[in-house]
Length: 406
Image (spheres, rainbow, N blue to C red):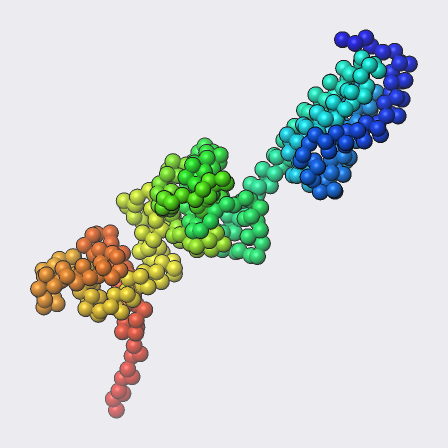
């Protein structure tokens, strides 16, 4: 360890350091241009900001050498000279490179002048490195909190459907890389919820995700993601029901409902409305799978008053059957009213049971639902009731005026 200088020697060294501080800053900037390619490629305004940081570092070192107890103020002294945007354009690694170059230039210039100055430079550079790490850590923490609040705002906008022209920019600010279809998954929040685990699982599935925790309810907005540097695969993309099955362990106990896929994130509110409506009535399906698709809960949603579910049932089931053949509607209705009995249906319609079988197969071909299963029979019967309610035939006709007796 170098011997402690006398007060006179220290005063002389301080005066000398103040005289050469300008030369040190100039030499440091020149060294940065020669040794750090990223600095040379910066716009002039940012190069100037980096130069201010280097000059502030040299000035702060001189003040610290005069009074080492000023260590807590190092970060403020050095980084206050730079605009806030510099933290986003210069990484921590580049900042440490800047510190290394500044220290190297200063050591070369003061070499042989005083041993205690060289030792002070080493101590000071360590303090600056820790201060830089602290500044970047605080910035990252603040960015993380800001991202969390922004993500919660975006998810809330999707759930409520109150989207505006700022939503795409907010989504972009979150770094959303999803492309193509999007679906919303709604379930319960587990007692020990790990957000990072959800994001890790989503990345493994090549899925981008927005996470919203609303008390006991957990909402995931899912979109397929193309990771940077990964070539587009010829394999078909994983369907959303399978993605939901893989993410199922991230949710707490209870029902898990997947909304229908929509073309883009800005339309995710449609999927969210269906998922939330399904989540509200999932308990009405005693043996509901986990996860369950919101469209599989259409009858429960319709009974609860969901207008989208009512319209979907009518448009997907009743109207296609009616447009194809009125015989199919009559056969399906009779089959369901007779407890799914082929013989009873055939007797009511005065046809052979094989004709009933053929018509039921045609029903399945037209709409994709099989009336012979108990669950799908319930869905089809609900659609028939809703469709009949909406037709002119079943609407209440005005009561004819009674003839008054004289």
